[in-house]
Length: 340
Image (cartoon, rainbow, N blue to C red; front, side, top):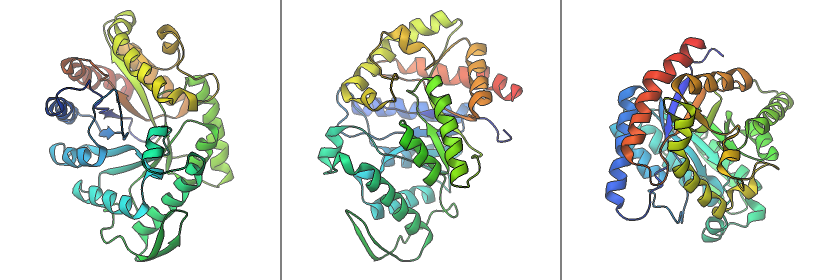
């Protein structure tokens, strides 16, 4: 693909409880290092009631990142849209695009956790329609002066978003999707499918064909940008990368099982496996050359041209993650870009 292969950092910000100020400063150190070594973007997800982890919220964090990392794209990955009202999101995100000088990417998803749906009063069975009407309303608020629209949980009565996004007609919209029906929705309403980090490559390869057929059905071209999030760790050998990453990744995926994440994955892609089985076809682990080769294969198999790298997991010393950013920028990405 002609677009330059990009590398962004997702700051999960998932820390053991204890010292929020110190943990925030560690997260900001990662942002500063990503800016310094030449990453393309900074990504922050969004969860509420995120026990057993301690994590700051997405929009305030990204607003601060826009100030301290003036070159990086500011990527919401993802906003849990059904939990919110569209006018609020439209104004908050337009403000973030303005603060960043037009560097915002609006990543949107549905979510899966009952604790969040219950806290925000969202019936689980209404998530899909609620998501779609919110996305329609946000687009209209960004591109029209006044909007009249009756939704299932809101009414826009000559409503206006007084701050429009800097990017026209609006910031790029990435749609996160795990299930087949959501992949089709991404083709219909998004600028691209933001490929999740959990499905195996065999599943993603099957779903990419589904996505392409859906694009054809909706008479839309294959997107210029194809982002994918992956867990990444580089060491002198694959065996060492696995050994060093395993305790932190096991802790993360143990929590995700407790949250119910694996219950919403396609058949066969649950997390209820030993670590050596989770490794297969999911993570980018190995030497710099091996990880570069894995990224190159993702591009050639799936068209992926933007890796959102997760390099810091619960309990990992921050210096290890900082070193990973340096290695990815200096040893991995030059090989990827030279090959592509």
